[in-house]
Length: 135
Image 1 (cartoon, rainbow, N blue to C red):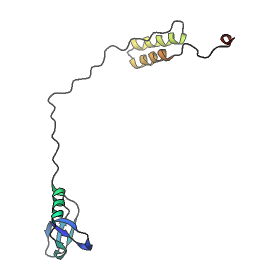
Image 2 (cartoon, rainbow, N blue to C red; image 1 turned 30 degrees about the vertical axis):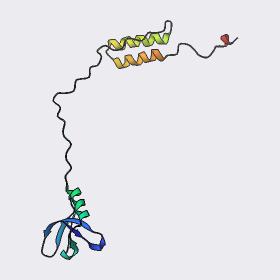
Image 3 (cartoon, rainbow, N blue to C red; image 1 turned 90 degrees about the vertical axis):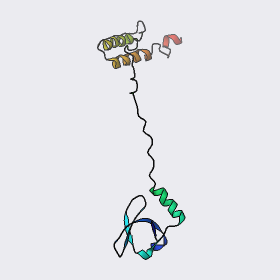
Image 4 (tube, rainbow, N blue to C red; image 1 turned 135 degrees about the horizontal axis):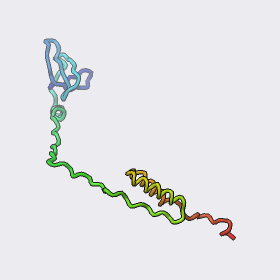
């Protein structure tokens, strides 16, 4: 290794070739090459050698965990959720319950779940008092 000192700031490089006139250098660990005259080179200092060791030491690969058997499969319930209970006398709930039964028979469990949500979230009591209840 050599330290190239053009302009005062040293560049560390590994000597890759010498063509008789110029020394060809490459950064430790790889990278672009450049050339310098032998008079521009010096030996690296102790700190620079330590930096070169850091830059050229390969990083150890993490140990690969070998899986000897596959992960157990995720078991989903075969039976869908039970149907929602419609409020007696509510036309909206009765229609949603009928559509839910139809969807379950057609094995469209996503649509059936949507109708169950509609039945459960449908307001059955009007929270605002009617004019007759106010008097």
